Image: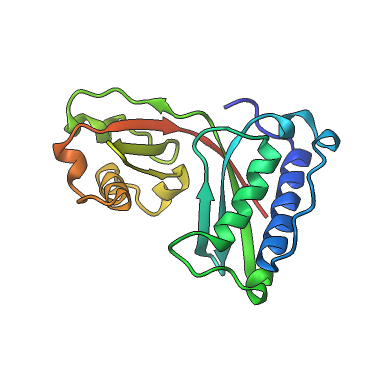
Amino acid sequence: MDEGLSTEERSILLRLARKALESGVRHQPLEALDLDSLPERLRQPGATFVTLTEREMLRGCVGALEAYQPLAEDVREHAITAALEDYRFPPVSPEELAWIKIEISRLTAPVPLEYELPEDLPKMLRPGVDGVVLRDRLRRATFLPQVWEKLPDPREFLGHLCMKMGVDANHWRYHKLQVYTYQVEEFHE
């Protein structure tokens, strides 16, 4: 990861996420984004996950693993999607907005993690540092590095990630999967 975003850049992204969240939840049109008015780094392609919590409980989390649009636009899109389209939760209601807190995770590009045997994999992961992507043919799932706080054991982490991918928790033990790691710069309201 580069040197990280400045305090001002982080504040701008959090404000953009909040405005997008409120517009989306209230079914109001989103204002056009004036990219020219933003700092250069927010206009560059960036990949983010936006996590919403309500009273410290997960309320939505959506993002992209690869950069395909300006960082500022990526944050706005994922703020709305996390509120309205995370399949695990009903859409956020306007009454909940006062309780919703926003966390933004800016991702590095995922890099392949080469390993020979499944039992080697847990030793290669860096708890608290690495976000992990598992891919098995058409299935794919990721956990942000923040998930290590709840699942600090690498074997348990991999098991839950397999279940998120829609396969048995022990799938990683018996199948060679494509594994990618990435890091994040995380900040929140």
